[in-house]
Amino acid sequence: EVQLVESGGGLAQPGGSLRLSCQASGFAFSGAGMSWVRQSLGKGVEWVSSINGGGSRRVSRYYTDSVQGRFIISRDDGKKTLYLQMNSLKPEDTAIYYCVKDFWTRNVHFGDRLPDLRGQGTQVTVSS
Image (cartoon, rainbow, N blue to C red; front, side, top):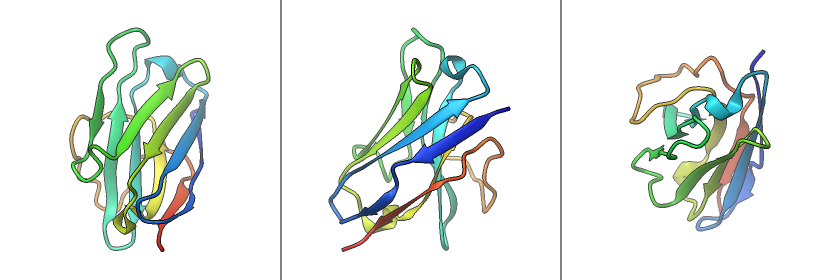
């Protein structure tokens, strides 16, 4: 059974930083492409970033335009953990962030539907 548990959310000031973590279990993490998506009121579900799997293969990272240059996705296959380093946070980054066992290289239209293989989410609030 796929299990994903996010942590690291909280309150940050504009311009601040947070690091999200996602502990994975129940599947072969090192071979799995992984992603972060977020859901906020009025904006539906938005893809944020993805990172490929495959162990020693070249790592490829993808970001939605609004976080490019501010967020960094990474993974530690030995710890079966996915990360999202969020810098220069903006109020519009306020959302529930979900770790997802799936992989995209560009924006995907989710509407209001969250991907099935996801964690419980962690709230990120950016406010002064």
